[in-house]
Length: 344
Image 1: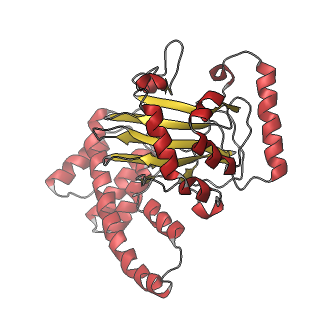
Image 2 (image 1 turned 120 degrees about the vertical axis):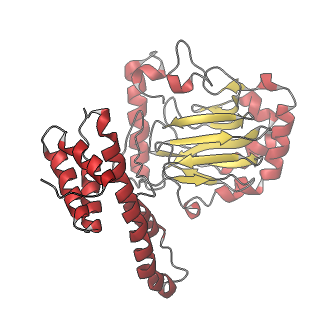
């Protein structure tokens, strides 16, 4: 039997003792024992292990015990964070100016401040590529040309949008019943697009309407993926609209955003990292990691979106990926993309 402790802890102990015997209950009992003996760090470590192995079928009556365990772990994490901050301060001073992002993120994961997200493409996964939310801008020097043309691209976008909402297509164009997460945006211009390149094919009429944008895109190293790329599109997210969390199709390619019109109240998340758009400042991310976007403002948000090869793929690997995707497309023929797993 566990020792008698404070009334609230006594209630927790009674809930735990009423559970069905097994490893999970044993861990909770061990953690309670550590608490009763004032061994708070040992209690927190044991609770942490228990919370990582909660049985699938657990009575709701046990919820107060789980809440207690989480509270102990949270309090311990806060103390651990202060302890580590004091320990690491000297190292930061010694290495001022050095990039320590990965280690800082590791600390945040350890302290449960940051979730770990991994690529989970809906179609093709290439192993051993870096699992990074946002890629280093220096890997894509050709973006300089696009960024330098921002004012021209913005002007041509303004001319396009002067034609009214009907010039845009719904980005989520679905026949039949959409997945629940796309129900709100399915076949809606609240997330509307104007294609310049569409799934590997230039949209000549639209490119002719945007000649300066077309010239800027000549610097773009296109990735050729059957039925997917290259793609370049003006993406317009309407006011008070959110794109739900989702993943892309293939981690052999990455996605580029060149922000054009960004009212305040717009945001973007890839995995555990959140960023704001800044007009004329491009960034590159892995869309096979869960991502979402939102526009909480009263005005539309506009971004030029295009795809590019993952820079860590060699030229022979790129050719093989192109051949592989074309082979899948040829095998399935006229089946829609979603039926062959090539569309997220």
